[in-house]
Structures are given as C-alpha cells and as structure tokens.
Amino acid sequence: MRSTAIGLVLVNDERPHVYQSNSHENMAVVQAWAKKIRERLTEEGHCPPIVVSSKTVTSVRVAQEVGEELARANVKQLIMCYNVWDFPYLVWPLVNSLGRDIPILSLSNNNGKYPGNVGLLATDGALRQAGRKTHRIVGELADPITVKKVLNWVRASQAVTTIKNEVYGLYGGHSMGMETGYFHMVPIQKALGCTAYQIDQLLVVKVMEGIAQREVEKGRRWFESLLGERLRYDGHMLTEKTLETQIRLYLAIKKLNEDYGLDFCGIKGQRELTELICLGDVAEMLLNDPYDWNGSKEPTVCATEADSNAAITMQLLKYISGGLPTLFMDVRLYHPELELWDLCNSGNHSSYYAAHSQAPEENFKSITFHPALEYYFKAGGASVEFDAAPGYLTMARFGIYDDKPYMVIMAAESVDLPQEQRKALGALTDPTWPHVYARLDGDFAQFLQYFPANHIQGVVGDRIESLVYACEIAGIKPIVLGKRGKEIMPPIWDLF
Image (tube, rainbow, N blue to C red; front, side, top):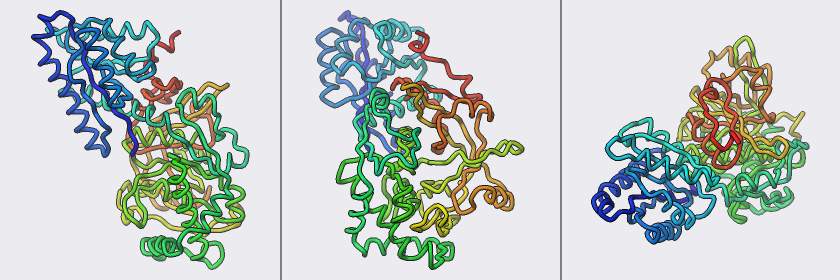
C-alpha cells in the first residue's frame, strides 16, 4: 500500500547547560513514541516509513539542519514531541524546511516536573496564531487512549498526504447523469490535491479483447470451485461466456490502472457496458477484494457507476483502516419499525464483507452468483449476492455544498438477522444483490437532512476519530451524526 513518511522531532531548550543535561532523556521519549507507532501500525497490517530526527532542536542552525534532514527523508507529516520547556521560535526554521502545508501533531506528556504542556501550548500556539492548522494530544505513552488517538491521527494524516498526489481513473464519465458522483475538480483539488484522468470505455473494451484466454479461464474455474451450485448459470444471462466477459473487464481495468499509474478508479457501466458488453459487478468486487485466483493482493478502490465522490471516500477509508477493503452501497430502503437500513445495490460490495475474512474460501461460503437482471443489464453476467456479516462499521460520504467540501460520517452496525427475516426484507428490494442491514447512529430525519447523495461508503471498525482528523487536515467540514457527533469539538479555525 502506498504511504508517506512520518517524522518525529522534539524542540528543546536553547540554554546549553539545560539541553546538555536533558537531550538524552528527550531523545529517548521520541524514540519510544516511534517504536510504539511502528509496532502498532505493523500489527494493523501496514507501517509507513518512520523517521526520527538525529537530535533535539536547540538552536536556529540545528532547527534548519533537522528540518532539512527530515525533508531529505521525504517526511510528509510531523509529530512534534514535547517533554520539557522549549524555545518556541525555533519551530519556524524547523517546519518551514518541510513545507507550509505539512500536517502537524503536537504531542506532550502531562508531567509536572518537566513542563511539556507549557512547551506545547507556547509553541503550537505560535503555529496556530500564524494560521497553521495543528492537532494536539496530551497524555502518556503507557496510556492506551493516548496511543489510540496518536494512531488515529497518523492514519488520518497518511490518508491525506498519500491521496494528495494520486490520480483517480474515471472510466467513462459519471453514470446516468448522477451529478453527485461527478469529479468536481477545483474543490477536490483544493482540499485533497488529487485529480482525475478520464478514459473512454471504448479503450476498456479494446483492452478486454487482448486479455489472454487462459487467465480468463483460470478465473472462471476459481469461481466455479468456490461457488459450486451457487454459481447459477441459466444459459441466457449468466453463462460461462458472460462470466468470462466480466473477468476480462476486471483484468482490463487492472491492466489500465497499472499502465496509466492510476491509484483508484470508477467504472461508469450504465448504460454502454451494461447494455452492450457486461455487468460490472464481478469486476468491481474483484478490484475491491484483497485476493483473486492468483492469491492475496492489495484492494484497489473501484466505485460503481464511476461515482467519484464515492471513490474518494473509499480511498480515504482504505488508508485510514490500514488497507482494508471498503464498501459501496445504495441508500435503498429504511424500515422504521426496525430502525434498520437496507443498503444494497448491484455493484461493488467486496466479498470480504461476507465473513470479514482474508480467505476467499470463507467469504464465498455465503455468496451466490445470480443471472443479471435483463430489465436493467441487457448484456448479462453475474450479480453477486450475500448479506454482510455482522459487525461494527464506519459509514461516510464525501460531498460538496456550493463548491465547499464536507463529509458526513456515522457509526453503524451491520446486524445479523434470522434467515427468514433477511429473505423477506431482501424480497422488498432485490434478492439477487448484496445487502448490508445496518443500524446507523443518528435518526432518519438527521440522515435525510445532511446526507449528500444516494450512495454511501463504509469500512469495518471504528474510524470516526481518524476521519474527523483527516477532514480537519484537508479543510473538509466533518458532519458526524448521532451520539458521536455530540462528542466532536470543532477546531479553533472553524470558529473564525
């Protein structure tokens, strides 16, 4: 997974008799935080480069030297550790050596003997009064809550600084005129820095024609071995040929992403591909999955109907979660008597969500491939059907209001319903599509008031704090629904 380097540094006292006595202890604090962050991120699946400054900052020249040292290491976010009183003005030659827009976390102890808090407030206060957006965390390395907050900030800054120079592959344009999925270039570039490259679906079809048949057959046999009778060939909409066409689409998009250096993508599908070539569901699922018939792989975010704002949301969720697959769903139906949402669509639910497993054999136990609905998808292929496994999810959606970016965020729970109830609820929408039966934090009226589009995205786990950090770093307004929203304190720059 792509990532950017994290720098750690400590600004110290300028007086020689002071820094000569405390530098060893201060460097030990910085090294300890680096070790903890490295260990925890590795446990979660992916650890970016972590760069510790060679010394504490004790003068203007040392600040410049350390800043340039971190810049040469390509550091894109900075954790400034505070353990003692420091001379605040030294922060400027340090951070300006790294760039004016680098995310900064100010991290201090809460120790009476060594006034790290005093140093943090004085130095970070200097940054903020000049308009720098910074975050502050105070606590001890031994405190799990403090460590979690630091990790959440690191994942957030990683998401923002990684997506910043990425390119979104827009295959075909926004589908069916859905303008909430259009790539609104200026506000997106201002907030996140990424851009889009639009590729006509005609090129996708031409690349599909050159895909090796042996690789396509390998993919089809893999699905047949996993699904058995749950691969419901009907001799018309779902045949070996139409399934192989969907596999060709996956391989073609994968090749084009690699050839063009595209980091995430979306496939328009409707109407050209779905009426003339194939339904995109299998290809989109495979791109978002952490595996295919050749083994484990990194998920590639791919949005159904080339929904650009969905793809952006999913890419941020992927990075914030340490590389996990993400979900794309329609906001389909609310059951008020159950306080339950049915989030389903013909599209790219990663098969990972069937059992939350990295092993395809486990996930595919509860997956069925149905013939595509001819009414909508004349070219045929398979629709992927399963109900998402129970578990805690974070749901989100990037949106734009009057050219101003915002993100709606909420906690959610995918619930496990009795089979007969799931069957009855599925019949009210489409039983051949994937479903997430979810309880969202926040009532229907609040959701209806703030949610920006018909598509919603998600990832397993509690990522709300990280998403809020990421939004604040990028200049995106976070709107957190429900109980968690009441816990969010707006940053100082939102008050002006």
